[in-house]
Image 1 (cartoon, rainbow over the protein chains, first blue to last red):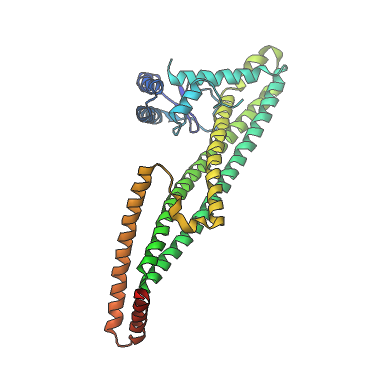
Image 2 (cartoon, each protein chain N blue to C red):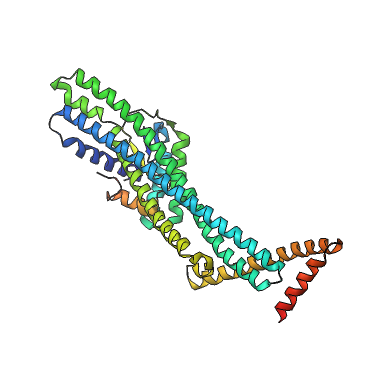
Length: 92
Length: 261
């Protein structure tokens, strides 16, 4: 499974780690919906760390689509919300 | 659905839309390559723009630091002339500058971070564009209509996603830099107008924040004043214990007389 962290790169992550990632992802999602900045920052950092530590970075010239894509590490709650509603953040 | 999944679907749908545009599949390859090169140029320009902003903030930091050093010297001078009120005024102004300086240093670090991030983004994109170009040439050389669509769709794996990623990174960096440039512009104007000479007027924020800042400024001022006094009396003592000090004593007496007059 390939996971991209925007503005950082792509990682190959073993499929058996997906459950862990999903659990953290749920926390992020709940925080975004609740508009809870504090929980959002904490759970987002945990999710990104989990990807970085569980995964192996793909070579920089690899041309592969990702199965999962995560927001940039410094994204605000507001930016993630925009990203999910498909407004503005991805040009073109 | 999970956030990770939703974002990847959005990226994929954007990529598919871009693919649908051309009619001859081979043109799609060239068209996309052209777009990739344009984006590469754009991200490099982004790096240069952020670097320019960073240098501007560095220059401002140097200017404010110089001004701040000057105020310290003036305070020292004022105190040695027995003008505690003037020394206090200089230190108060300096304390206003210190807040500005801290803000500038934060901005400098932020811009540095943006610059590094965009530099890495441009390196990643360049590697992927190179790989895409090789793949594109291979496909064109061995092109058969029957397999064209599949192979060409495959050729786009990764590159469209990378372009979406980098495009977004450039956009975010531009937005952040624009905000900082506005602030930098305001500081340039302040420096030019000489308003920073009276930096006490500059505090922003609500009343309580201002009051808290005033209190902490006051404490800073008192603490530094005490330190300067301690330093000065030390010097004075050293001078007086020597034998060649009549001029110094006379100056001190004179200033005291002026002060009380």
